[in-house]
Image (cartoon, rainbow, N blue to C red; front, side, top):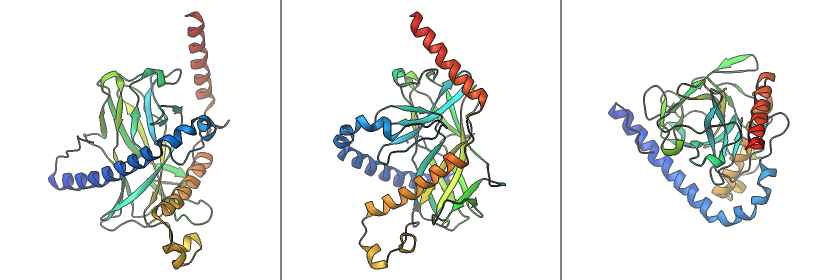
Length: 304
């Protein structure tokens, strides 16, 4: 969060303002997490149930954990998944991630999820190797093909069943601190933790509130990039009396926590839709690779 100096002064001011607000949100979230730290540890025994992976590679998402995007290396590929920042647990091949977008002037921004690789090798899954200090890391937006349409960004108004259509007049960008979409380099022990800014803009006016679906890939230098990863972005202003089916007076009684929970529920519905309808099933070749990695690790352990 301390390297975001872009070459043009005007852009720099915009980004630094965005980062200041993003950091306020981050610190507020961190404070909230600290307040509930003891309660979360009482529920650790349920962690595996809350985040299990089913036979199709889809994942359940808890509502209070701090999840980032995991980046690593495996057999010449850039490995990916989700990482519970509080516990250090990595879920390989997770491809859909939620984000809550806050309004800043005429754009929506978020600094979560971050991109993370733990310094502790003991936290790495079998078959995944640590990054090397100095490895350059990249992130790039990608197109999405969905329901016979291809677009950079898709949109759902959050009402009724999840149904995404191409978003018109809205752009999805990832603001990175260095040229060529580089998010920086791995540090000592291969550790990396950074929060690029995810941004939705509409040419000078605030985009329509709703749920947006964007895609990106990550890459460790000299390795092949990841599969397409998906960011499900819920914006400020989506939760209204009409959406909840209540009166304005009832809506006015809701707390900020109530509104955040309602937004989170809509985003999670969209994440589940993406996991089951957008992300393809693992290929036979990938399943064979995963199985072979497990067998290799098993043989090494038995021989040691």
